[in-house]
Image (cartoon, rainbow, N blue to C red):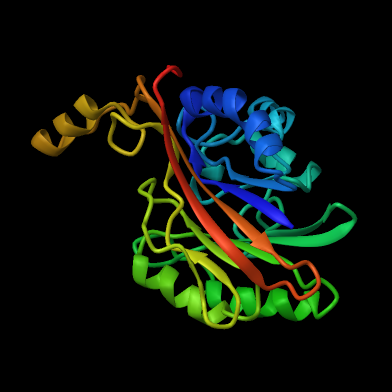
Length: 262
């Protein structure tokens, strides 16, 4: 089973790049399932139903998210209606949507679990206990489990990798928009990378116009964030999984700049 995991899509530039490259990538690399973090896909902040449908039409199978999923309230109802859109599992009970789901990949069940970190983030329930609880609910019937851990601190992400090594197929970090170079298979068979990076404008500050961010750092005054233009990078990873055991057998990170997409 070959799974493509795509880092945080930033606004229209990120979506335009996926529209151009994802169908070709799925075919050329024999991708069986695509998971994409879409929490920044609508104007750089949040997600809307039309943008989600746009990403599904491109070939995305499941959308994960993080703290910015709540930025556009119109998505709240859609979170309840479409099981293909996930928000972090460790939000308090009663918030819209779901944090995990079971999907079919070539007639093989596959679980996707979305978690959010707490270090330098919001005051959420413990992601480590949430992961253990969900795995207890899933049991041994679904060996393939893929985790998007949306977190700021590298130490928290590394700790989650060790916590889940041998218990899930992959732990992939999102949120920082900066790809890390530590993709590997952990000793018990879990694929791991601290952060996929983003799918968005590379001549920017994590997807936002650099002039806006530099002015904010210089003055400490609030400024309206605007998604940058120019060359767009695809931050992603391809993970190969043995569907019988759920163990990962390979992970390849992708960091490709496309100069033609604006």
